[in-house]
Figure 1 (cartoon, rainbow, N blue to C red):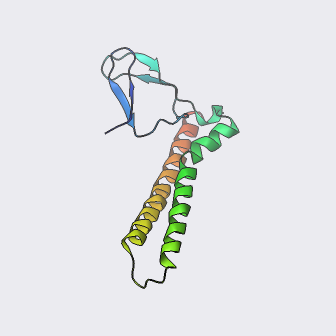
Figure 2: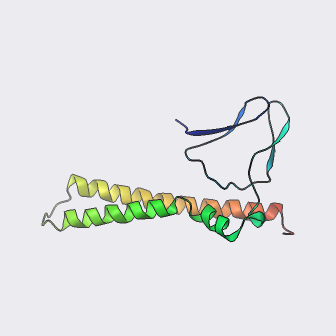
Figure 3: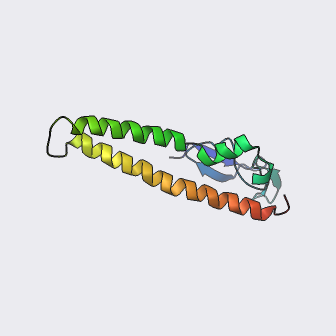
Length: 127
């Protein structure tokens, strides 16, 4: 079901599962394993330490892909609709559903990333 799992390097306990592997993850950089209680670096970084390019990548990673897919499916739907049919074809219905799914994903993803940025700034308010 999950594509990527992150594990404790000491005991192998999984501490994170994701469907994609982002290059930039926000966090303090260290983590303590719940099983073995050992501390280790997890590769995360705080917002203040990211370059402007990395910040843009964090915010918009995957958004461009969803946007392009939404536009492509919208165009296919328009082509299908201009064929003169008065009723909604199964292809057009599928396109509308997919477009709605892309827009919903954007509506959830962007605010979730802003919340993670805010939490990162709260951890390091002096930077």
